Amino acid sequence: MAAQVQAVPAAEGGGAPPQANGVVAAGSAAAAAATFQATSLYVGDLDVSVQDAQLFDVFSQVGSVVSVRVCRDVNTRLSLGYAYVNFSSPADAARALEMLNFTPINGKPIRIMYSNRDPSSRKSGAANIFIKNLDKSIDNKALYDTFSVFGNILSCKVATEMSGESKGYGFVQFELEEAAQNAISKLNGMLLNDKKVYVGPFVRKQERENVSGNPKFNNVYVKNLSESTTEDNLKEIFGKFGPITSVVVMREGDGKSRCFGFVNFENPDDAARAVEDLNGKKFDDKEWYVCRAQKKSEREMELKEKFEKNIKEAADKNQGTNLYLKNLDDSIDDDEKLKEIFADFGTITSCKVMRDLNGVSKGSGFVAFKSAEDASRALVAMNGKMIGSKPLYVALAQRKEERRARLQAQFSQMRPMVMPPSVAPRMPMYPPGVPGVGQQLFYGQPPPAFVNPQLG
Image (cartoon, rainbow, N blue to C red; front, side, top):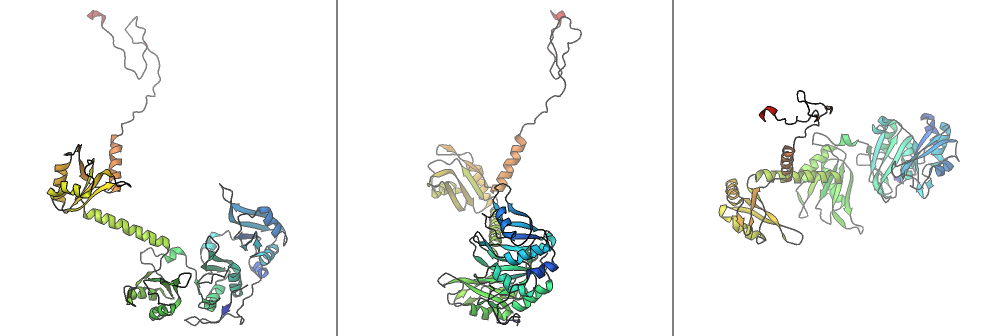
């Protein structure tokens, strides 16, 4: 069943879809075959238990099947969740697409489309549209039925979690660019199952991520909201910067606000201005944090780079002031005792004895001085000095990467030179001019020592 399309115009004045009752009928797959002559079908969203023979039995009911292949993992032989079915004629393939698309097999609706082995057309994004803010009840069939009125659909999919629940967005690829543009103009900003959806052209990831480091973005993330802040409040505040396609405040299952949300602008420049103007401003005694919405992987990468940068800056700043100690005596079991030993050499900024999970000293630690001169004097005076019953080892602290590089360099210098074995043939010979000596010589061996008989 198609999603219920309600004629609610978008902020920019989009028109209503052509059917007044709001229920869009499915397009004819036979007409699709007339313009897209093909005999091979891609069958996706397969349950892992579906076998080749089972698919053959299902599809042979509507036409003459030439071959069926469920694609499997090379090592485990488990199903990858999709298959290819080849028919003897385009008419049979079209009939199968029309009759069997979204039919449940082993309790899971299958998704059929014409097999397109040309990667350039699949990856180009031509006539491909992106739909978000979908109601969780809209599945592949409902999305297909809703958009098929605008033209022949080559591919249609709602993104889902591992559990099968909708992620709230999907993709539809039309055969013609004109159909895609028509769908965008008619459905963007409309209510599908009482939720206003965004419908726009699909943009590839490489194009979304500007390599210059200043990416364009439409979606804005805002956090530290008060619990009373609603979508209407966000729409009123952010709407001053330009047309908005969608607004959402994230909530718990009981409806309580999670105090963050997202605002999607029609124009990237409007989104950038909103971030620049609203970030750090106070609303209801709450200071908002407003920035470009990022994926989890992007945030993790950014935080990792920031952390590594801070570590490197701290190491560069404290170059020559931090000392590494090992072979500490067992009596030096806390930070204060270690500080007392080095206090005479200058101002200490930090002091740490390293301990295991049980709180027992590992026999190592760090002492950081305010100046490199104080650290240098402490190193010269304390390295090798008997503290308790052990000689103390003191050296400048190094980062893990620097220490590994230094050890690798030392190891490469210490490795002995391997001499290639001699390849000369071991041919027996006797030394000339020494009668009566029957000792053999071999190439590659030193000659035996001979005593001059005249010396006797």
